[in-house]
Length: 395
Image (cartoon, rainbow, N blue to C red):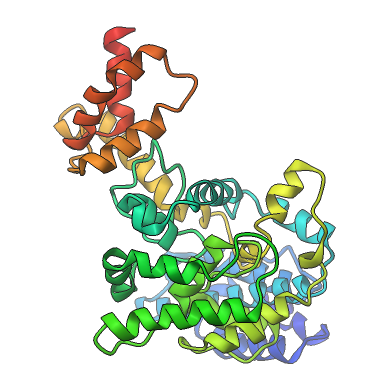
């Protein structure tokens, strides 16, 4: 273990990597006795893999029966530092990566980063973005804005709407987008649907976005992170979705000054400006369909260069909802197994049912049962449950 801990001394570390290493060395003595009980078999030769290996050891190999309660916060802090070390190293590699390396790395991370679920979210939002936010049902608008609720029926929303950036903590933002969606549409209309996005386009968006908060939020300043969520969902080839938790590591990985929560100009000039210097981002449109799907979302997929492990994919709200539904279905002692218990508006129920009935594998007679399905979904049952029940009855 001592050999593993000291091995970065022999590596050529950047200033940022050395800072991470020193922070790690300051914390390790607090859990050294526990670490020394572990037999080390892997000795990485580069800093990113070293961080990854030590983080894995702290997560999987430590005997937590021997960890004191007072040591848990220290261990968590150590893991966070090591995870940031992995992220920064991968983002540093991203800055010089050509398209083939970018594409290959994303495919290699597909399982731990829930790539297919993320792409399904992006595909869905691109399919509805021609519709103004003001005309969307609440579930779609929340999916675009980045807030999961139990109204997101797993039969329709087969993804976690909070991938790339949750905005559930931005209460004022969600109040405003609910009450003044048309003004957010005006802001997003400043950004062209295709082609180059200019600084003037971005400035026009920011001015309109900030104006919404100035007029309607009683003095609260417009936050950057939710704005980037809207921009990245509208143009995932041009913008990176930020969260307060991601800003620091992204800035360190891109080697730019850390952005604050209101730094709209710095986001464009520093972060997006740096993005636009990267070789992979300038890749011409690929002919291969699989590559094309990634290419059209290439800016927002920078997220896949952040640290992930086997538990990252399991944090999906969609997977949790699926598991919850399965548990209810298996529980024969509760009526909850036949209902979501969520009352919906007629418009919302109709929209969800119509989307489900677009499935070509469903028998044609279900189309004639649309009104009955809508009524049941409006009363609180899930789309899946109602359709499966009717198939069981009518064959």
